[in-house]
Length: 597
Image (tube, rainbow, N blue to C red; front, side, top):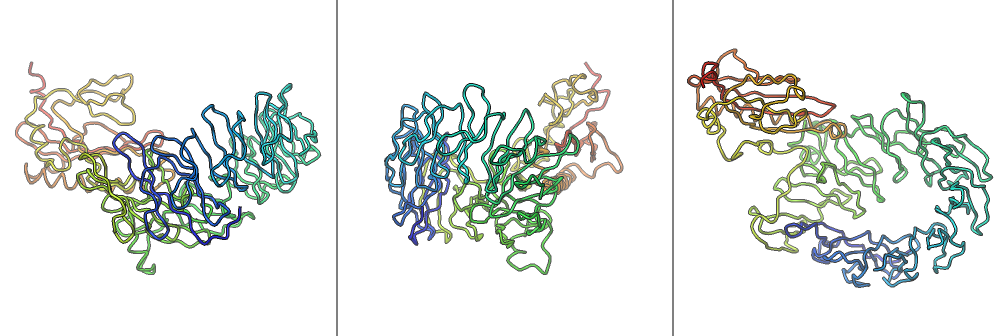
């Protein structure tokens, strides 16, 4: 719905909630002022309200949904179990207390009462909706223009046809806006018609294309065929087993983009992202590479043409001073930043983007116009599509307070709780060196003190644990020969893990710099540990190594301390693409001490 306003909707900014609760969301204006403090448990995308402002679905702290305007005021008080984003026609689906669905207008009041057991988005004036009698189609007043009778119903396409599944046979066909059958139900699956008059349909396990008369354009031959985009292309998976390809085909069934590498299944801002597992770039609808594969990682563009990306090559002396400053202290000098759909890359002066709990970059994917980056001092900076900080969320050193500040550092909001309630943000990918330390008391405790404790400990059999292959976590627990045939249990003494990390294969496929970064940090830890142990126990034995456990790469440094040997071993292992790196410290007793009762 068009709007003549020059007002901009507020940004949605997540802040940590009280201990044991999820995030709370604040509204911050484009000018940096606080529109609403972080007291919302959910906020959707703001949509023009047709009156010069914006409206969004939102939920209060108890999880009750209503509708907010761009000034942060409730248009409809939160009293519903759920509301969804507004559609182009200015309607938002909502769920009532009894579980039924209706539609609200941009003023937050119901336009279509909640009488439906299922409700879908409007397309070309009609929406599929369900009652106890089945699926049918309603208009924007809620009137059923095609009575409920189908087992399932899809969206109407520009040509006025929609796919339906009939109740008696379970087969799919197509009807027109009057409910007349145009293509007889004879398919096992059906997707909407594209703008050029072809529709993907499934027979058995394979997909093909039909025209508006139901005639085959391409007989079923594709393992997967998605709906057509507005540009007239549909994402396809084709080829025989062992020779698969991904790409896009047109309404004539011609594969116009074909890639053996990975490729997104969606065009954003006219471009589709592809990569070879190492470098990412973007193609246009003709399959031309319009943004070169210069990025080690990148996401799909958001609606305004912004994506978080990581530059592939180190920035050299010819790069701008701004770019080189942003790349400082990054793996091999490469920079994170904002990539625009016109190919412009804007470096961001923060170490890396914020990730979810599983290590995946959040980016611009939530439609808020902001991407979150971890700052060097443990805060979270929310960056706009021009690479500029809009605001920052940060915890105090003792974790007792959380602060929301504008880009100038002025406090917009602050809350105080018990000490340790709020945590500083930590990089998930390129962690600080001390973040890999796991020995007791790290990083404050000197590792040489740990060595002293190990040397003084009562010796007993031990076998270091593999993070990939072992079920056990205690090195003193006997290894099961069936689980680990290489375990021999010959070491006798005391040991501790100094540092460790686990790199998932999926993460390394998307973030190929992870292993280089971890190797560099573990090299620093090993060198520092050798220095500390040498300072305490003297020079290590020249040319002597001792292997506590074999992997795909290991090295050790050995000191003789009295009758025992102090062993520092680095350990590298690969399994099914996963990688573990560990640094072990052990005080190994002589064999005659092991033989004592």
